[in-house]
Length: 65
Image 1 (cartoon, one colour):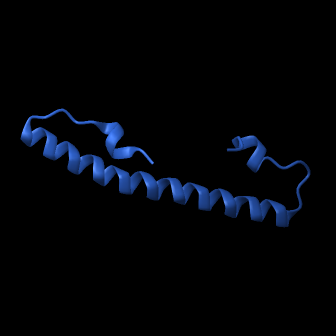
Image 2 (tube, helix red, strand yellow):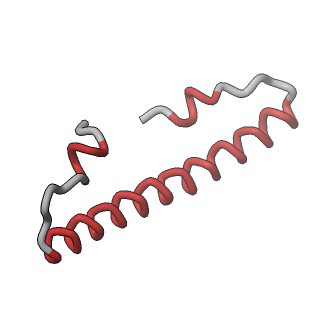
């Protein structure tokens, strides 16, 4: 995966290039937000079940890809 600078830094960009970069960045941020919102629901549900059952919660099993 490319670093942030490699993917989003532009030298002497035109306005169109800046607009395209901003759209790509907005989509990437929306993707991360959606990912963390959905995984957050799974983590909260699993935490609730683990707390009620008294068993330890294994976060890695919930959030792995």
